[in-house]
Length: 360
Image (tube, rainbow, N blue to C red; front, side, top):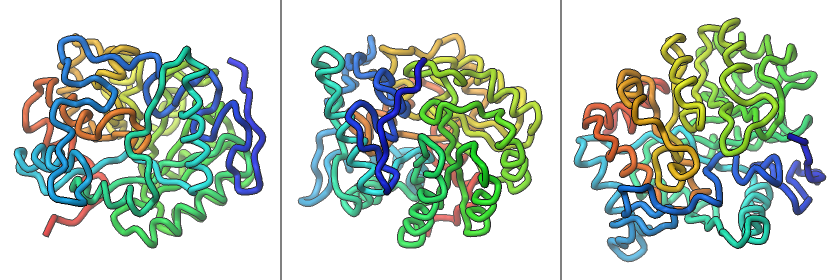
């Protein structure tokens, strides 16, 4: 796959029209989401249309309450949880995020008229208020560079965001470039609690020699890395289980969190989690009707997913999802893996991984 990139402005945001920092390639419709051609419902689950028409996601509750709040809160309350822990949400500099949304807005002409509505398009404070109204106790600011020279700048923004947003897990990022070990160490010293690595957007080999000491540093620190390393929605030169598997062979204690359950190579990434005890998987967009049309999870592998119940984490891709937040929760519930599994995935595993205090 060719690596066509838009030019970037001094703030690190893409200035071109063909891509965006969250897009990576004009054909990659959304490396952190599903595919715009796949907007139909999951067969057998017509209530999840993938277009924001979840069966009961339209409740409004009290005036000023975000739509869907009652449904989200009812989900975790029924399970006896104090809320949710979402390890895969996006906050980034507003100029960068606007470029991302502009990219999604332009998908129609590029994909024969199919659109990707941003369900939670709003200002930063309003988006924070939505997550808090939903009862999300802790979340992340997933952000990442698509070229050298961006990561340190993004990390500075993320550190400031974490200081003013105490319920956001301090997030940082990296790129294979000279100085990467130094700024990763700086981020750890500043309190970073989770890193994001995007092999697809960055178009880099996770086994790049420049990153080898970084993986060792993160493994030693016990700080998780959420990595988009699967080949969905479109394969990249270094996506798939092979490259990141080579990294794990050298750094078996690395706390790698495979984004999107490794979509579409689900079973291969389940295998890595079964082999390496610190590997985890996040659920981002998996099992929703929107993604099942693109890359259905093989039902034969559900027992393996159940067996890894202590290392599966809730992720959603908020706010850049084309359906209500509750759709992700209902998609997990429909798997029929039981309430104990849901409690672990939607709260307890993340709370334990990040050492969250008990809810008051």
